[in-house]
Image (tube, rainbow, N blue to C red; front, side):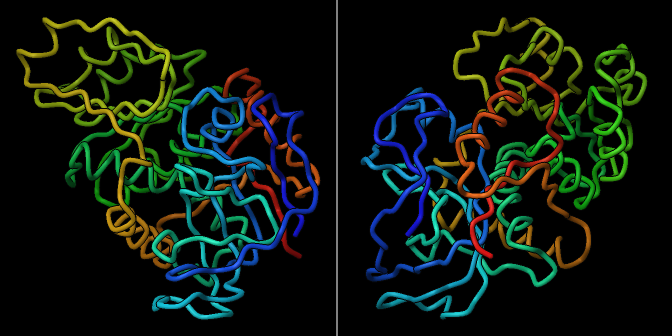
Length: 332
């Protein structure tokens, strides 16, 4: 099979596209003919060796997948050949990644693809959607009628947070820095869309929610707790899911007297059963027309290195040329 892989840690140019042996499904495993593989910042860190996880070389890159079941191993009960599936958690904790013509994985990491979605769309919502869901509902315990602020509403996680919070009956505010992204946030249903380059964001948020923000979902890698904490409502919750090297200052006097919480999490700490609950909600919301994935840019498998460099330029380098997700198309 053709696959995008690395033989050692390095920059994006270390990605090779070439032939690797076809995988075969063992007990409980599904062989997927890949249609699309979405990539995420964690892919960059794994490739570069910045995140220490079990990994065998050659290591296939890519976290998210969508495609069609080619074959099943003994004991598989949820899928059969011909079923369309999507999922995440590939390339993590010793598993091989998804940027290949074929992928073999435990059936518990896969879900049925809604008929309305292409493989590129299904793959693009996987990690970011599950991450958004875990932060909002498992960690922050979001309730209908509460207020949510999410930074970067045009990004992968941010766009999912907007839609999921609205689907659950919350009020949502967000920020973006480009007109195209601001328009997207409005289309996704955000009640307040601010331009962080021009607007006084704290002042606008205080006016929008006078008693404070119930759930602050921070997607940036360097969270400013000196700004976030005073803007929380009594019993407000700040959700942090990025920033491995960040060392923010905590305004303690504004934090503990109001029963506020700071909640951190990483998606890969959650079991397949826990993530299945997220996927079921996502499938339902897609079917109801309340959740749509945002594919920002696609690259063919042969350009997997360019795809990762483009993502890195936008996430680490702040190029500002990406709205939505980066997807590697494999099949068809």
